[in-house]
Length: 357
Image (cartoon, rainbow, N blue to C red):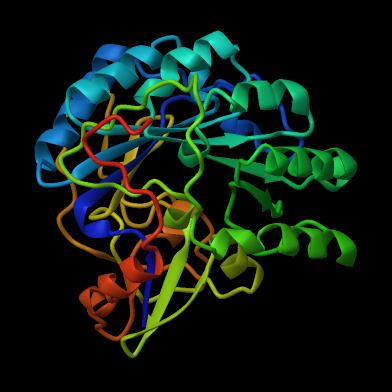
């Protein structure tokens, strides 16, 4: 059996980087360790050293830095770090609550290959969120919407308005012990609420439609060496058994169905992905399998992993970890036909080294 993300892992290396843990929001479903500011944002000069080290060791790959927090746009040097990533030929993604001003977001948008923007019903208002969302091109953003039962009507209204604005939105299930040990149990939803979540995400397994390009959008420059797919379909998971691709699914669905036990599987964390925590610890996966490889505050020019790892956890719970290639019984990832995947997603927009809008 092979489990893998549907995009081509062979030409990219993802760095999940929690550059600090301060957030201006205090969401009820978020653990304090992700927002309390106990880990300061990394100094810019040190961040540049880390970027240089990673890019120099992965020259044959397209390196993508996925900046997270906390809230990464609260980092005063965020624009500078995005410009530096561009200068060394790598790409940037951010996970943000989109609470900064339209003017600020307009500044950083051209330097982002993709953005994951989250509407948090505890604090955000949909009209303000939509104003900021429109800074980003619909093909280069995905909206996460944690479905908070305590703010259910507000979440449903936001889901409808974001969809009507022609942006893709994921109705996110909220799980117990969010960000902790990775519990498989979701918080309580009524059958009707669960049905809304399921129905709202059905469109995510369909190929992305090419949308008419709107005037007034900021140009997005993607200077990578090869072609990268930053579409919604890059968040899909493909399961291959006996060389035959099964239907696509999502990390959320795997967790809900409790089909995320990969103990004993060979995991390609470290080869396809790296995680840097807010404290500077470097690990092969977000779930911190194996030992800490380095700490960027002590060794910014650390050596990248060269071997796969064996999963020792009974539940894989982080989306980025679930997208990693995993194999059982000595399966060969190359049997997961890339031709089949590319044929299924022939209409998915691919960005090359050119201005795309």
